[in-house]
Length: 428
Image (cartoon, rainbow, N blue to C red; front, side, top):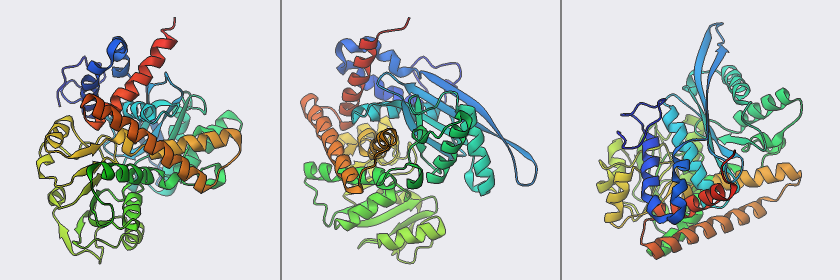
């Protein structure tokens, strides 16, 4: 994708990828920022980018090198916050965009964080557990100069989990000479993790999905759901919708697309994925569909919960859903956004829909600092309240200014970030 923006020298001008999608979103919100628009270039430039070499000794004695990144997009409202992903297609452009979306997301739900993101360009399936541990520890040591409980707090993302965070916390703590539980979130409970964190992103998708359904006149009980990605986000959201009486009729992941007109048995499917690594081969499926047919499945609610740029102008016209809940970060391109809006499809943007994870990460961070931990009911109730308040604030702006939910969320978030930037001023 080409760009009309000033592109930094470290990106290829004609292949700016997800970063260019984010820049287009900032362009769309700029006319609504009033006098704060003089600061808008702040949002188009990451504050800090660290690119590191991550060498490890493989089990066979050979030495392997991997590219690692940590990008801090903005810290005007607080320390950086964002996940770390291990994926063979990770690029600097992608991590920049993800860090920027974290800035918007944290601000949209009014969590006192800035935006950050990290990643290693690796296929983790090609590494043994020992190799994964050594790579994680080396990466943590390399980025240790810019992370910390009051500087930048990593969390799990694609192909990372509680164990990854435990290794990161331990590595940072050993380098610091003290136990620093607050350096990461999404940790095991035994190391200061929070109850409800594992389910938080999927639960947030469900909560805002119910609010959006009420606005669109869609009854959750009996609603047909299609889910792309069946990991920690899509799987949990699917389970909660199924428990509420919805029918999860189609699921797609890296193993393929499965379908059942009367709804898949979600608990059994979750067990199957846990045992086999994908939805492929699930015996409870009525049919296996070509992957491109997933976007044509008749449904009321579509949940893209995999990777970015999945809904494009090539498939947006095929989507039958009344509501799209963006469980993934950046799954819809600006061109597809326009098509969907013209067709009357309500897109609940990632910066609201999947903000449950960072909200409960914030709860975990607060609990670590205070060394006082809440019950799961307290956490879920607080999460539900914050997600509902954020959704209704965005809905109010949507109606007031006649803009999409995405633009409304960006108006709220960018205003908060730039107000902080303006009041703080420039140093020196």
